[in-house]
Amino acid sequence: MNDLFAPAPHDTFEPTLAAAQARIDALDPARYARTRNHLDGAVSRLSPYLTHGFTDVPAVIARLGQRHALTPADKIVFELAWREYFHHLWRHWGDGILSARRPAPAAHYAAELPADVREGRTGVPVIDASVRTLYDTGYLHNHARMWLASYLVHLRKTGWLAGASWMYRHLLDGDLASNMLSWQWVAGTLTGKPYLFNAENVARYAPALTSPGSAIDDSYEALDRRARHAPDCGPEPGVHAAVAEPGTGAPPAESAAFPTGADPVWLVHPWSLGEVPPGHVAVGWIEPGFHARFGWSAARWAFVVARMRALCDSMVVGDADRLRRLWPTARLSAQATLNPFYAEALRDARVTVQPVPHQFDDPPQAQPSFSRFWQTVAPDASTSQPWHR
Image (tube, rainbow, N blue to C red):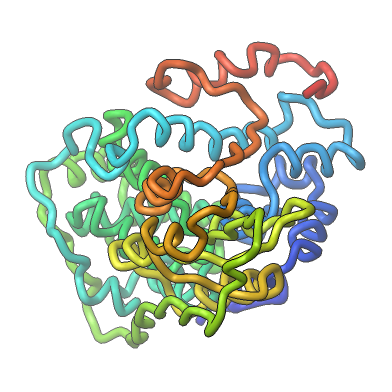
């Protein structure tokens, strides 16, 4: 493995609120703005904690604002807004985020990943290093995610949903909206324009992984023609070392006993791993239908379950009927989620849900682009006025 991608202390994600807060405290907005596109840049690596509800966007901005004079024009604020934009679209489109919004640039794509990509033996250094890092750490820098997705879709002619589903299985921070819509953005099925990169771009932001002479070493004009008209370019010539793809993990077992007489009960699901509201009995809850459809790595299960066990004395695995059989009269509460199966179970079990905090308003109509969303929710973002939210 290239040293640039070798697991480092900052790639270890401890499942604690203190670890999330330490990452916020270590973040320097100015350095982030200058270096965030570089694979060794000063990015936050907060995404697993945001996805799983250890913290949220307003809490990150508030805590960061205690040390830095943030404004809406700060790049870190702008990038955090992308997460809220993707969730804005999820609220409006629902499962539509799993379907292409616009036609893809080429006519035909494979429904499965090429084996050489899945095994990290394409012969393109930046691609193979990205696959290995994804498997080893459950995390990839956003630029590496974009490069990997672009290579898969536009040069290897793999359907974006197949690639997005594969990446989701291995990410610690796998968020359905951010992952699926980012892949659509790269594929061109969200905005109508494919995202392309080349070896020169890699050399600028990840010089240790430069890939001269490979399939990505071409002009953007040529890459655009290949994205629209050329077949799968295949792996690079020669024999390249392979890596085994990790399998999916399994949900935890239920606890042997439940506090069935408890009232009120706070259901701690995988996207609400923050602090439990005072006065509630906390019960970890897994809805199996979701995980049968969207598999997770063993590392992600370990991350989530460790936090659940720190918060809860018991764990239940089941749908809405099981929740109501266990607590037929108790007041059940939980944080809202848009994740399928979980969202329906909360509704069907008549659970009182608390909304996820948002930094920005949610426009009543789905905004067709992030720029339109940003103009709507942060009209003063071009100024340097202090943050007042």
